Every structure is written in C-alpha cells, then in structure tokens.
Length: 254
Image (tube, rainbow, N blue to C red; front, side, top):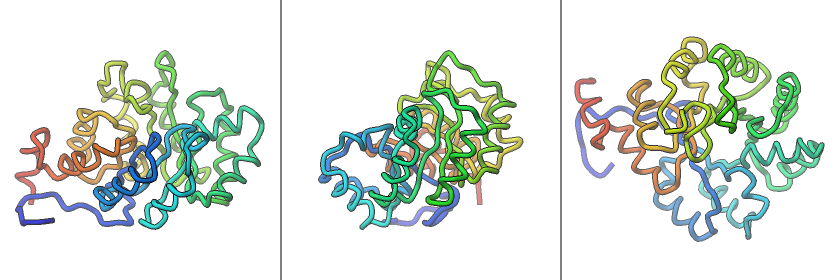
C-alpha cells in the first residue's frame, strides 16, 4: 500500500484459500487482459472466461499466456462444460483442458438437467486431472431451490472432490442466491453457513450491494466471484473499509 492507515482489516496473502476474488473475463482482448493484470493482478486470484466465450475468443492462447505469465490461474465457465456434456462429449472436454493447459474446471448444471450422482461423478473424474470448482444453483429464475437442498448439494460436491463450491448468481446477479431485483436471499445464505464452512464457498456477487452484504456478514476475507475487471479495485476498497459502504464497519476492530 502507498501509505499507512490504522484499523484496516488484514487481508490474506496469495495464494489465498479465503479472501478469494474471482474475476470474470467476458471477452477481453489480449491488450485489455494485459492492462487488466497490470492494474489489478495483485488482487485477482483466478480468472473465469465466462460461460462459453472461450469458444469464440480470438487469439485465445495468447490471452491465456498473459494470465499464465502473471501467475494467475484461469478456467472456462461452467456453461462450456454443460455444452460438452449435453452433446455427450465429456472426453472431448477433457482434451480441451489439456490442450489449453487449463488448471481449473467448473462443473455446473445451471442450464441443463443433470442427475446429481452423475454430476458428482464428473467432479471426481475431473479432480484427477485439474482442480475442480463446482457450481450449485440454477440459471432459471423460476427454479427455487430450498436451503436444505443447497446444503446437501454443496456437501456432496465437496465430498466428490470439488475444491470449492460456487453459489450461482449469473454475471448479472439476479438468480440463484439473489432475487430478480438483485436482493440477497439472506435467509438462504445464512442457513448455508450453518453447515458449509465459509472458506469453502465462492459467492457470485457481481453487484456492489451484494459484495457489501457478504463482506459485512463474513468479513474482508470472504470469497467473491463474477467480479467485472473494472470492479476489482473498487471491491478491494470495500474489503478494506475504504469506501462509503463499509467505511465504519472495521473502525472498531483491532
């Protein structure tokens, strides 16, 4: 940091197991990725190439090299996994991970109906190859999953070999963990936390109010995902109590 302030929360250091920021690349150019890492790399723990954007992104490997050289892991969004699965191309998906030396994989079922035992089997198989993130929650705003089911699904996916589980919100933040307005389903979140350790969850929280909610609830070192590149530094100031939304929250902490 450029100067000293007291009563600033202590942030975990990279490589982090908690306090994780997952940034969303929705189609950055190679130059934009370079600029993004130059400014924000210190605060980014992993980059997700959103949904299936890697399928159509020009100069894909050149961009991935930007992340590799910065020491920032990356992965392709869960929707790409689902696109392979619905076409019965799981082995082809595994070959893609090898071809592009992708260190992480996201296993999700937000867009397809997938038997949960089969999903856990995919997690177990992929965990032999890469580090697995699994996503719980539907992209269908009409599909409401009760809290006990979120807990059951998350625990089974962790048991199957997922490193962390992701709470679904989409890039817009208006499904899954959130109401269509973007409001947090706070009862759901707090019930999940009675059973699943907070460091095992990445909460997708693209909207500022959502980020503020999770930081106030769980502290600076909560894992947050689907953060837009231009929001990474603003998020870090929220984590540190240096933006109006959390300005008073950490002042009394020693």
